[in-house]
Length: 335
Ligand code: BGC
Ligand code: CA
Image (tube, rainbow, N blue to C red; front, side, top):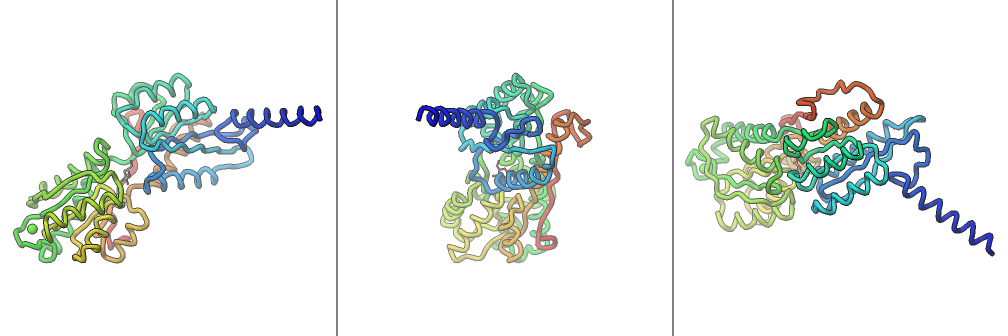
């Protein structure tokens, strides 16, 4: 009996040891295990989920006899305090790298200092910290797309569609675009710059625009349905263009017009998630701008593997911290 208790205790002790030893419990060959801690602003975001799926798939493909790649994902639940605690946990658990999709992009300095103290390179992605924070440490990186570029390309889609089909889209024949803007989270670089540069592309091309309304729907389809329904009630059938800072919100706008039994105006999104590509194919979405989820995942992993193997970083690192992905216009022509 005593013996049994003893071995039971020993097993429990072993289990705790294994749990404490790494980012997860199934790696005991620590010499060859690369541990990546991934902290997400929320797990409940279509685009972010697709980056993570790509990262997991690529990590698996890069495993071999000598290398196990272990990824631990933390859901920040849109709370910066929660995310900071998760970063502490990932550091305590012995992760070799941190990939951070930061909740509040103005809060990066504390996080970078933590990583620096533990000497764990930190790769931010999709949610861009302010430049002066990035300069705190040479092992702080950012992988993402240039927000204003996304806005410009979205504006370009609207410009082309408007010029080609003004007779359809200019409902009140006043040679002016009456638009509404579905914005992402306030203060997100993609919200600020996509909003600004999409419209600027039109005005730079001498297109007259009239903003009917602009408001945040926090990247969310359901919030976008509600917002757009409000606007449909407010502006009757006078909305000619809907700019959405991302595809989920663009799809929400399409639903709102469909629910109201109205014709769908010119709607554009950003991301090129699969459901948006379907919407382009069936003619409800005019176009989107591809935000390269696969490219972000593969760039992060490339960088990690180079650093892990002490190889020269021959990636296109700009200003010592930044790896940029290209946006791309997607319309019926190339969907
Ligand atoms: C994407 C959005 C996403 C957001 C999250 C943006 O770049 O376009 O779909 O919700 O990032 O940070
Ligand atoms: Ca008009």
